[in-house]
Image 1 (cartoon, rainbow, N blue to C red):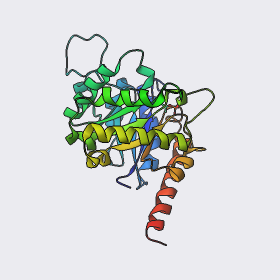
Image 2 (tube, rainbow, N blue to C red):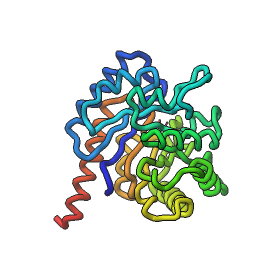
Image 3 (cartoon, protein in one colour):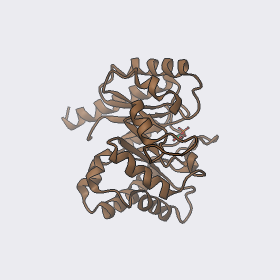
Image 4 (cartoon, rainbow, N blue to C red):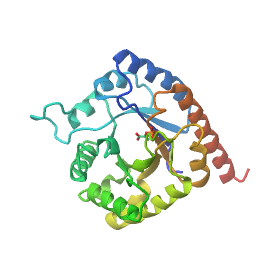
Length: 264
Ligand code: PEP
């Protein structure tokens, strides 16, 4: 395993006051502070980024933005710029989330990816097919090409790819991808990235995570059957009790794998 497991908590629009945001972050922070195997990335609404970032006193957790406009400043009513989220304390930015697909296309996402990387933050780039139909692989490949077409390989270690099939996200049916489906997608994604970046080393520097209807009941399947390097959660991202169970499961798995590597 390259680094700590990532656990990205996307609060979306589900936290509605500064007080709620700070209190929620502090209850999550108290759990993660004792944890040595996970890097937690909390992504509050832009409104509360700054207040939440002020609570960060430990490298085990960090703050991410849920999106950012790729210019530093300008006449863009209602937008939040790259410079704004960076100055507010974001170290990560989620980009290309399927819930924003009606507002942007992949050309916009590509501009955002480049801007985030050039501003020394980490881009969490979401990719994933709408449906597992006969075209799903092509759709995934096209998303990668469109998102990374202008990205030099020197930025690989600032990239996290979140495989988030649109059909699995926040679905009422709670329908996560299976670990087999995750592995199939990873095969497609890694092969395409290797073609694009022309080196295996760049691909090895990128981190790959899964998101879509995850919780404490299904997370173990991925750790057992895949080489996933982290998770992105939405619905359970503001439930400290579920997050705590997920932390524990990730930590137990990490320890189990470390002991197995030592043949103990
Ligand atoms: C998401 O919105 O990226 C997500 C993974 O949501 P959920 O966990 O609710 O499926």
